[in-house]
Length: 346
Image (cartoon, rainbow, N blue to C red; front, side, top):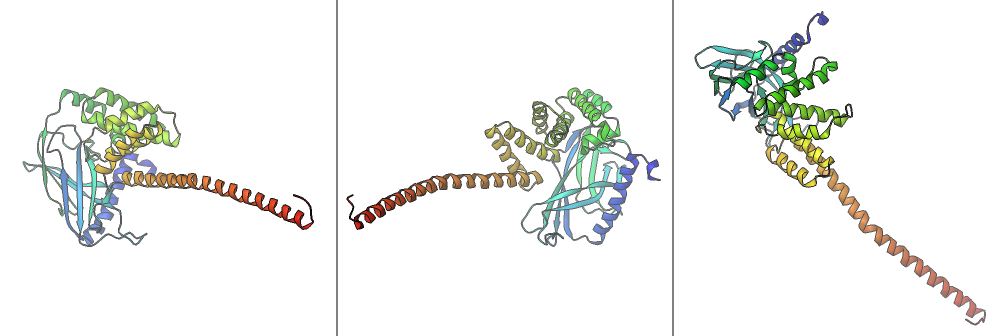
């Protein structure tokens, strides 16, 4: 029975089954020209997350089933393979959680998505737990590799990182940091407070910036949904720390978007415009860029309507004055004419 399974096992089983189903579909319809992995950090320390970008280039445009037009995003699923340079297999057939890949061109042939390679749920450990040189590739569930290979060098962790990793030893905390997911909603406040401790104890590290971004985006959701009375200055501080992450981290785009909203709420127009410009420049095809563009267009339309109304109202008022004056003069002329006809003096 499902109730016997822990949520962790259920989560992993869902990943595996989902990857198996979607991967069969991919295997039978491999219509892409190539799959390219891109990384910006070729050297990391044990414990540091690695942001990975995947680019798919297709033979034919991807058409949305709903709109019948070129799809702006597609859902991707594949398997991850990580090996040591000395031949030792570290990760095999690891299902990458399905995530959205964003359209990069007008022809519908290129899509890009990002994810963070850090924690192995199945083994309950970080992926790169030993120093050495590693090879990363992507393939399908049957072991067929269809991406390029990228190499990274992993160095020993610092004393500060050892302490940080000890604070993140629980799979629940790692899941919350990675995806903002919590097994039991009633433990949300507890997980948030624990992540604040991780952030405070790891300042100056990539983990600190990442945890700040997660705290900022999650607390902003609560503020936006009015489920909690959060301190907006605290949220703002977390988000500004969060955008110090490398651009390839998916959560950085969301952090920028939330900061645009906060600065707008506070009336800091110049700062909001600067953040909006950075969001559009660095993530021109991103989900949150589309949101901010849509909102900007709506506000522009509202301003245009206000300007039109502001211009037409005086015109209508002047016209009303002219009509009333004309009617008054006409009335006087009619009265004078009637009196003349009756022989009265005017």
